[in-house]
Length: 251
Image 1: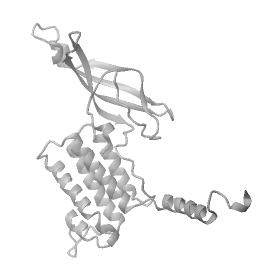
Image 2: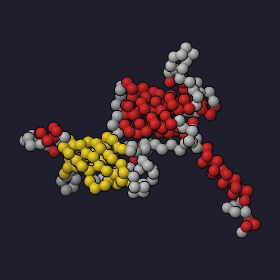
Image 3: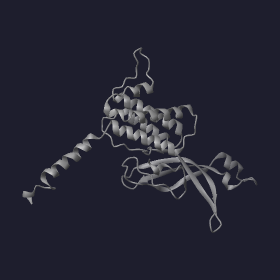
Image 4: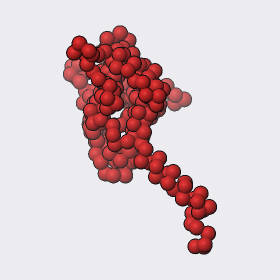
């Protein structure tokens, strides 16, 4: 599970260490300051006698810059005020909750081969985009991504009568021994996607990250990065044959 995305909000001035979506190495840093505005209700009521700071609601936007590749990311969301207490008496924190990043942050970054169908990556990126704002729709995008995973494996969407096959039936058609170990995982994504479609539960952030972890597992099992494995094993075999980095007669 990618724990750096477990927290939904943060105290202004204590931004999380989000990774750059372009290089996946650099940490995104805030450029200048967040632009924060009170919403209409806060503007209307803030001068009333009954109004307390905790009733404040905001919208915010900011620019984040990658310290490694100089990419820029726009973040926007909502904010509120929370009171805290400490040894000095306490005070108020501004709490910011991101709702959208552009370009979207990568919740997972599977180490897979180039044979992954483009539609899988497209729906996965769409899931990244709505991760912050709509957990039900997000997990439903993950469910759609496995439909395209199955397309890439040659599993038909059409039954003998020309109708559309249900996802459960498509998953059950996997018969290759190397695919059997992911059938349970694929079915779990199907069930989670159904929860997202029906809106029957409020999907927690931890549950959503677990769903991404399952998709990551399936992608790596179904589309392993063979080229990387071949490169590593070629080097291993060379070292073993030479009994070291170089043949001994060259030393």
